[in-house]
Image (cartoon, rainbow, N blue to C red; front, side):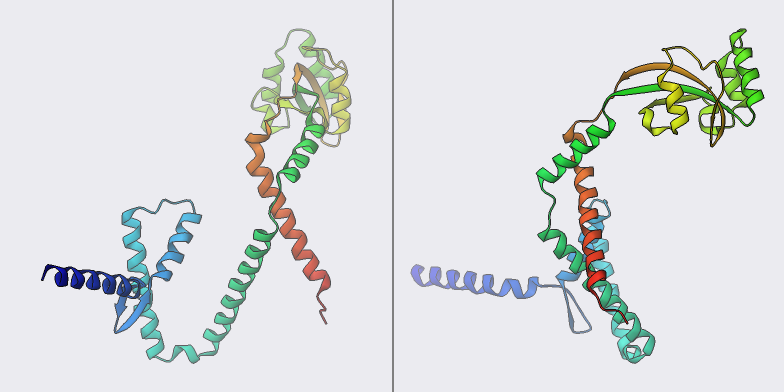
Length: 261
């Protein structure tokens, strides 16, 4: 008797296990129509990609959203809105959007950025930004005569920072007393760079420096070896940039091969 009972329990367990996936495939039944769980999973993935955590409360909201969509869709179908020209056009555009997104996702999956490519890009960055960094300050004015007067005034004891705040036409640095912070000298216009790298630390240009922006009075505040981030610190950003470049090249190649009349 015990043996037969045990066999019955095992059979029930097996049947229950076999039946479970069928019911588990649906998140709800709306007006007799099954709503598959995959819809909720897609919305869940969208939430995760946006950076928001999927909490138990959020899971409930996703479920309610999926059910609400099914209710509204059934009503739209009852009213025959699927036959409207506007709906058909929008469906075609939506189909294109999804297919294109899948195309790009497939390309990226099969054309991942390698560690060697990341290293090469980092090496290029280091080569372009290595060397010395300069901490400079400047006062920018429109007329040479004004710049000369400022230089003379500073040499007599006026404060560089105070004049910069009052007279500099560069709003960004002017508000900070002319401070341009640390930068690679190549980041400035050539006339500015040439004058800056000739200065000794703490010294100011004896004559105004003309550029496309106006007349500069430049002071070199400090010099140091370039402080560059380590590869591990910027690896994700480099990988993303290279992936975007690969995708852009893929898109350009497809457009170039296409016959458009």
